[in-house]
Figure (cartoon, helix red, strand yellow):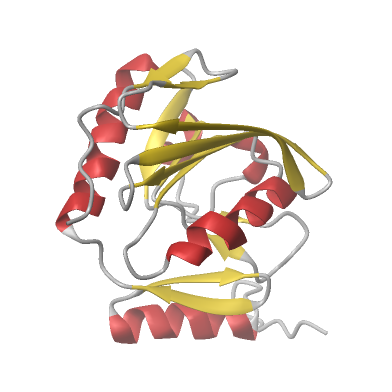
Amino acid sequence: MTLTSPEHGMTRMRRAAEAAEAASGLRAEIIRGVLMMSPALRGKHAGIINDLYDQLRPALPSHLRPYQVASMPMPGEPDDYATPDLLVCDRGFGESDDWLADPGDVELTVEVVSKGNSTKDTRDMVGWYADAGVPAYLLIDPRDGSWTLYTIPRAGEYQGRRHGSYGEDAEIPGLGVKITTGHLPTYA
Protein backbone atom coordinates (compact mmCIF):
# COMPACT_ATOMS: atom_id res chain seq x y z
CA MET A 1 0.00 0.00 0.00
CA THR A 2 1.34 3.42 -0.94
CA LEU A 3 0.62 6.17 1.55
CA THR A 4 0.17 9.53 -0.07
CA SER A 5 0.39 12.83 1.76
CA PRO A 6 -2.26 15.42 1.06
CA GLU A 7 0.31 17.93 -0.14
CA HIS A 8 0.97 17.50 -3.85
CA GLY A 9 -0.03 13.81 -3.80
CA MET A 10 3.54 12.90 -2.79
CA THR A 11 4.17 9.52 -1.20
CA ARG A 12 6.13 9.07 2.01
CA MET A 13 8.93 7.37 0.07
CA ARG A 14 9.22 10.29 -2.34
CA ARG A 15 9.21 12.78 0.56
CA ALA A 16 11.95 10.76 2.29
CA ALA A 17 14.04 10.79 -0.90
CA GLU A 18 13.70 14.54 -1.26
CA ALA A 19 14.56 15.10 2.40
CA ALA A 20 17.63 12.85 2.13
CA GLU A 21 18.76 14.70 -0.99
CA ALA A 22 18.32 18.10 0.66
CA ALA A 23 20.12 17.04 3.85
CA SER A 24 23.04 15.26 2.22
CA GLY A 25 23.63 17.07 -1.06
CA LEU A 26 23.65 13.66 -2.76
CA ARG A 27 21.43 12.79 -5.72
CA ALA A 28 18.47 10.62 -4.74
CA GLU A 29 16.57 8.15 -6.89
CA ILE A 30 14.03 5.47 -6.05
CA ILE A 31 14.70 2.39 -8.18
CA ARG A 32 12.24 -0.48 -7.75
CA GLY A 33 11.31 0.77 -4.29
CA VAL A 34 14.92 1.18 -3.11
CA LEU A 35 16.24 4.63 -2.21
CA MET A 36 19.62 5.06 -3.92
CA MET A 37 21.98 7.94 -3.25
CA SER A 38 24.75 9.02 -5.62
CA PRO A 39 27.65 11.34 -4.79
CA ALA A 40 28.45 14.51 -6.69
CA LEU A 41 30.04 13.85 -10.05
CA ARG A 42 33.81 13.76 -10.40
CA GLY A 43 35.49 15.92 -13.03
CA LYS A 44 35.86 13.30 -15.80
CA HIS A 45 32.34 12.00 -15.24
CA ALA A 46 30.88 15.51 -15.44
CA GLY A 47 33.09 16.35 -18.42
CA ILE A 48 31.83 13.34 -20.39
CA ILE A 49 28.23 14.37 -19.71
CA ASN A 50 28.98 17.91 -20.88
CA ASP A 51 30.66 16.58 -24.02
CA LEU A 52 27.70 14.34 -24.87
CA TYR A 53 25.29 17.22 -24.26
CA ASP A 54 27.35 19.42 -26.60
CA GLN A 55 27.22 16.74 -29.31
CA LEU A 56 23.51 16.06 -28.94
CA ARG A 57 22.15 19.61 -28.70
CA PRO A 58 22.82 20.75 -32.29
CA ALA A 59 22.23 17.30 -33.84
CA LEU A 60 18.74 16.58 -32.48
CA PRO A 61 15.50 17.26 -34.35
CA SER A 62 14.03 20.63 -33.34
CA HIS A 63 11.29 19.14 -31.12
CA LEU A 64 13.83 17.39 -28.86
CA ARG A 65 16.38 18.65 -26.33
CA PRO A 66 18.98 17.03 -24.07
CA TYR A 67 18.64 17.67 -20.34
CA GLN A 68 21.32 17.04 -17.75
CA VAL A 69 20.36 15.44 -14.46
CA ALA A 70 16.60 15.59 -15.10
CA SER A 71 14.32 12.94 -13.61
CA MET A 72 11.64 10.67 -15.04
CA PRO A 73 9.15 8.40 -13.26
CA MET A 74 8.41 4.75 -13.84
CA PRO A 75 4.98 4.68 -15.51
CA GLY A 76 2.34 3.46 -13.06
CA GLU A 77 4.66 3.53 -10.02
CA PRO A 78 4.09 6.56 -7.78
CA ASP A 79 7.45 6.24 -5.99
CA ASP A 80 9.96 5.03 -8.59
CA TYR A 81 11.93 7.66 -10.47
CA ALA A 82 15.36 7.76 -12.05
CA THR A 83 17.70 10.66 -12.70
CA PRO A 84 19.95 9.73 -15.61
CA ASP A 85 23.07 11.73 -16.29
CA LEU A 86 21.43 12.89 -19.51
CA LEU A 87 18.07 12.38 -21.12
CA VAL A 88 16.61 13.46 -24.44
CA CYS A 89 12.93 14.34 -24.50
CA ASP A 90 10.39 16.75 -25.90
CA ARG A 91 11.64 20.33 -25.66
CA GLY A 92 8.43 21.31 -23.86
CA PHE A 93 9.85 19.79 -20.68
CA GLY A 94 12.31 22.68 -20.50
CA GLU A 95 9.42 25.15 -20.52
CA SER A 96 7.47 23.44 -17.72
CA ASP A 97 7.57 23.64 -13.94
CA ASP A 98 7.52 19.85 -13.69
CA TRP A 99 10.51 18.08 -12.17
CA LEU A 100 9.67 14.74 -13.79
CA ALA A 101 9.82 14.36 -17.56
CA ASP A 102 6.97 12.32 -19.04
CA PRO A 103 8.49 8.89 -19.79
CA GLY A 104 6.46 8.75 -23.01
CA ASP A 105 8.38 11.82 -24.21
CA VAL A 106 11.85 10.43 -23.38
CA GLU A 107 13.72 9.14 -26.45
CA LEU A 108 17.15 8.44 -24.94
CA THR A 109 18.76 8.12 -21.53
CA VAL A 110 22.51 8.24 -20.99
CA GLU A 111 24.43 7.06 -17.96
CA VAL A 112 28.17 7.39 -17.43
CA VAL A 113 29.41 4.57 -15.21
CA SER A 114 30.64 5.85 -11.88
CA LYS A 115 33.86 4.58 -10.39
CA GLY A 116 32.15 3.40 -7.24
CA ASN A 117 28.59 2.47 -8.22
CA SER A 118 28.97 0.57 -11.49
CA THR A 119 26.35 -2.15 -10.94
CA LYS A 120 23.59 0.43 -10.69
CA ASP A 121 24.26 1.69 -14.22
CA THR A 122 25.34 -1.59 -15.82
CA ARG A 123 22.68 -3.87 -14.33
CA ASP A 124 19.87 -2.15 -12.44
CA MET A 125 19.19 0.70 -14.85
CA VAL A 126 19.17 -1.45 -17.99
CA GLY A 127 16.02 -3.21 -16.82
CA TRP A 128 14.52 -0.07 -15.29
CA TYR A 129 14.78 1.98 -18.49
CA ALA A 130 13.46 -0.96 -20.53
CA ASP A 131 10.47 -1.27 -18.16
CA ALA A 132 9.88 2.47 -18.50
CA GLY A 133 9.78 2.07 -22.29
CA VAL A 134 12.74 4.34 -23.09
CA PRO A 135 13.58 3.57 -26.76
CA ALA A 136 17.37 3.85 -26.30
CA TYR A 137 19.78 3.70 -23.37
CA LEU A 138 23.44 4.61 -23.93
CA LEU A 139 25.88 3.46 -21.27
CA ILE A 140 29.33 5.04 -21.34
CA ASP A 141 32.00 3.20 -19.33
CA PRO A 142 35.16 5.24 -18.64
CA ARG A 143 36.61 2.36 -16.61
CA ASP A 144 37.58 0.53 -19.81
CA GLY A 145 36.79 3.05 -22.57
CA SER A 146 33.69 1.32 -23.89
CA TRP A 147 30.03 2.01 -24.53
CA THR A 148 26.88 -0.06 -24.89
CA LEU A 149 23.71 1.03 -26.67
CA TYR A 150 20.50 -0.74 -25.67
CA THR A 151 17.46 -0.44 -27.95
CA ILE A 152 14.00 -1.91 -28.58
CA PRO A 153 12.51 -2.24 -25.08
CA ARG A 154 10.06 -5.12 -24.74
CA ALA A 155 8.73 -6.86 -21.62
CA GLY A 156 11.32 -5.30 -19.31
CA GLU A 157 14.32 -6.11 -21.47
CA TYR A 158 16.11 -4.44 -24.35
CA GLN A 159 16.05 -6.62 -27.44
CA GLY A 160 18.88 -4.77 -29.20
CA ARG A 161 22.38 -4.33 -27.81
CA ARG A 162 25.42 -2.87 -29.54
CA HIS A 163 28.76 -2.69 -27.79
CA GLY A 164 31.70 -0.55 -28.89
CA SER A 165 34.99 0.91 -27.75
CA TYR A 166 36.05 4.52 -27.55
CA GLY A 167 36.92 5.55 -31.08
CA GLU A 168 33.83 3.85 -32.54
CA ASP A 169 30.79 6.06 -33.07
CA ALA A 170 27.52 5.23 -31.31
CA GLU A 171 24.66 5.79 -33.73
CA ILE A 172 21.33 6.35 -31.99
CA PRO A 173 18.53 4.86 -34.07
CA GLY A 174 15.40 6.91 -34.44
CA LEU A 175 17.19 10.15 -33.64
CA GLY A 176 19.56 10.34 -36.58
CA VAL A 177 22.39 11.19 -34.18
CA LYS A 178 25.94 9.88 -34.07
CA ILE A 179 27.96 10.20 -30.85
CA THR A 180 31.72 10.32 -31.31
CA THR A 181 33.65 8.72 -28.47
CA GLY A 182 37.34 8.73 -29.45
CA HIS A 183 38.15 11.78 -27.35
CA LEU A 184 36.30 10.72 -24.17
CA PRO A 185 38.57 10.17 -21.15
CA THR A 186 38.98 7.01 -19.10
CA TYR A 187 39.33 6.88 -15.33
CA ALA A 188 42.86 6.72 -13.93
